[in-house]
Image (cartoon, rainbow, N blue to C red; front, side):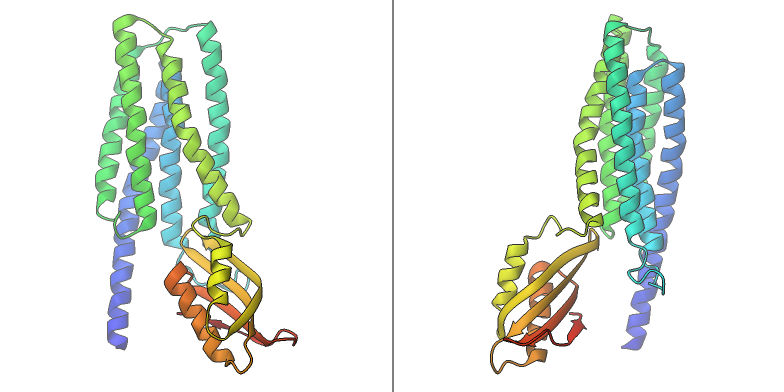
Length: 305
């Protein structure tokens, strides 16, 4: 049995290493193109390219977050950080969201200015840069395809890159229209459209990361449902001091004080609560403290399914 466990560990390490390499290549490609797109937006005077660069930044952030999760997520807790280092992933995502809001504000203000004061756009350069971006997205998606089913973080990065292809296609379409019609106002329209596409996902990212940092109840859980399920476990007469939170999106913890029925065994009640929370709500780390009715809190024990 020990040999099988070690083999499984080696397989996990191999998979994580392969995912990290693919993420690293995708990050390098996307980062290089991000710089090229910013330079292209300035040189060719295209607000649409700059807006798409902001969207490309979400790809870079998603890839960095995925790499952080792989590199730091498995790092063991120590005497200073007893919960480990998984919050780095959440902090990076929150910083990314705040930065994107700032960029979006700049794009919208600049777009309004350009509507009233149209500027010359070098559509050919705009089209070429966007076409290169589309190619980079396709290559990055190809690199991430193999690991997206084995890792939630890789899958998240894959979906970010896929979504960015829409921005690249929009810029290309805008460049073609400007070339054919000479209507330079199309550039700020495309820029605003890309910004409106990015902002809802940015808001969701900021909302979810803030909830994790505030140790709020994960979005997929309802505290009343958890409370009712614990109360229904045999041997449980009541409960209080219920807390459910997460260190990261896929790491949910729960602590609760349980009052026992008369004659109920504390160990059996703890095991029942732990097993139910794991099976029904996917909560993997549970601390249950038991006490008899009318008595002060007893000793708590941490149990794992």
